[in-house]
Each structure stands twice: as structure tokens, then as C-alpha cells.
Image (cartoon, rainbow, N blue to C red; front, side):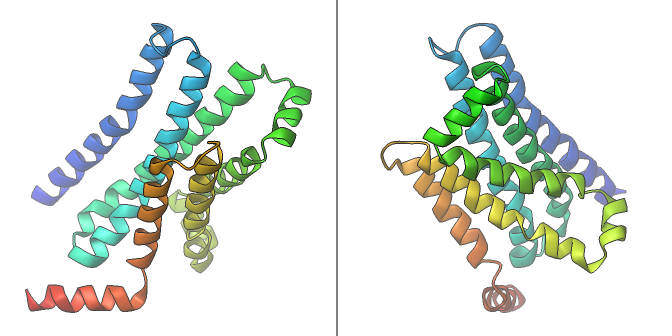
Length: 203
């Protein structure tokens, strides 16, 4: 009973944490509190949130492997879905609010700013992962499900690349995001997992 209560609170907390920025963004946009370029600011805000939640979605696996806290895995799927949701919102703001779904203008923007293609690649991967995140798809794909969902790291690399390339100069925040992604990847390496497991066993 205690375990199920903890799981419930973890899931509720994860959803509240995931929805709060969306509510804040919607209120700021509706209240005209995003400055003179509110569409641009909404685009940047949603993009940052997508990267943050993508990195957060990779964290429960590491925490479970290193510290043995398997309960946190219950939050992994929700965090991944919020990463996809914010990436989709980011894309829809770009094609809808910014370019009015005008395909010619969108193609011109992609031609001039190739980083958009990198972000689109990340979104395509996240879409595939979101669609196949259900238990039904896990059964259908079998062992291939895990192989497919390892592509989340490819999506993470593309998302960070897209984020960094969107600036004309190197900014510290994308560098930090890239370093965090590299750290999360390194902590998944079998030698590192075995080493941390031995340290935990000593305690």
C-alpha cells in the first residue's frame, strides 16, 4: 500500500511539474507578457522546455541503475511524453503562429536556417517514441522496443544541436545541455553501471 501511494504521488507530481510550464506559457502569451516579440519568445520558451524535459526523461533510468531507486522509473514515460508535447508545441508555434502554415514561407525558412531540419529530425524521433510508448506497442515490438527507444539519445543530441545552432554565437546554456546529455550517456555505459553497482554494494 505504501509503495502504491508513493507511485501515485510521483505520477501526480510529475504531471503537475509537466503541465505547470505550459499553463505559465499560455497565460503569459494570452496576457501579452512575453514582450514585443511574443511569438518568438513563445517559440524559444517551448523549445527550451522540450530540451529540459528530454534530458529529465533520461534521468530516471540512471537514478534507478546507480542508486537502485526503481520507483522513479514510473515517471520516465510521462517525462518523455512532455518532452514530445513541448517539442510539438514548439513546432506548431513555428509553422502556425509564426508562418501561418504557409508552406512556401516555411520551405524558405528551412533553406535559410538549416538548424530547423535538425530540430525536425528530433521531433520525428520523439513522435515515433511517443506513439510506441504504450504497453500494447511494447508487446508488439518485443525486443525491438528497447532498441527503438534507445533512439531517444539520438533525439537528445539532435535537440541540443538544434538549440545550439539556433544562436549566431556559442551560448553557455546549450553547452551545459550538451554536457548533461554526454554525462547521462556515459552513466549508461556498462563499465560505469558495474562500478557504481559495486560502490552501492559496499554501502
